[in-house]
Image (cartoon, rainbow, N blue to C red; front, side, top):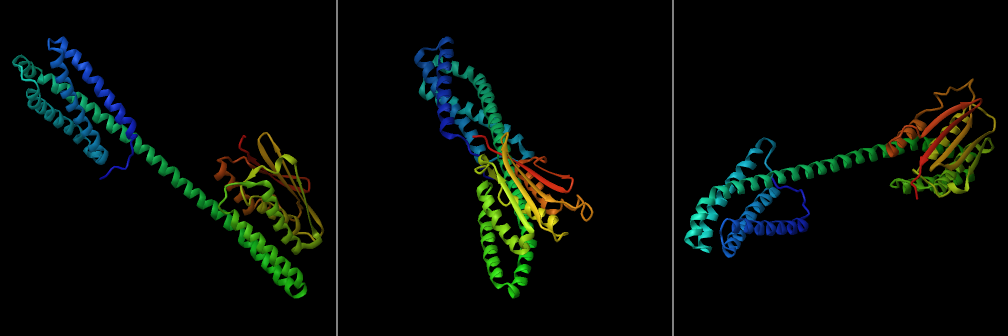
Length: 347
């Protein structure tokens, strides 16, 4: 099984080289204090340290490409013990060719147990560090995959919510166009063009996380133009936007379902002219949007006024900002108000 975990190779190689260079000089000083000449101590240290560095590198390289399963972790330590034995045999064979002094050969034989134990400890340490590093990297990769999977699920749910909001509006518009086609063909053609522009803008915004408020307002006006063809003089919409709010960021297609909800529950149970008020402003690093529509308590209920459209907006805001307090609704006398507050990134 090939391991896909990546390591910062250039930095590690440089650190590895410097570490073993220091180790060799330190070993030279120790061997010199044990009565070996500087020359002999230097040769011994650099050869034995180089061999140990090579075997340690083998540990890292092998476990880079192959990681034992969870039930076979003991093989790591068996492998380290085997390399320590191999290191001891290699030192016993190589050093006599480099240093042939009789006194040194006696010293070499006596020091082999110490060299073996020291090499075993170092190899076990390198094995444990390699294991630990792999686990940390593997956990990081798993966390990335988990976050990515959650993001895909969230994006899929957001897309589903957007798609669920469009069909009934499209059906209503087509029914209105059909009704106008016979009696008012010019209005029907106008509504078809407006519907085309609205749907085209919807498709363009599907892949955007946020848009400027001014772009969202322009898109909302396309929707309102269609609704005004349907309802004529009965529908009046008053949009008030503060000067500092035009460049605020807002999730795309967020206002249309709220306004559609306001039209539905403001117009559908009356033949009178109604006014929907939209007030937009920025305060304390939030973009506030209040949509107010008439509300007749005799023919409607508050629960009916918070149907799928507003529920989907609540869900979208939670998926985007992980907060449940970004949309509120309230009834004040004969008005129903849906309020949003959209967090703004600090500049």
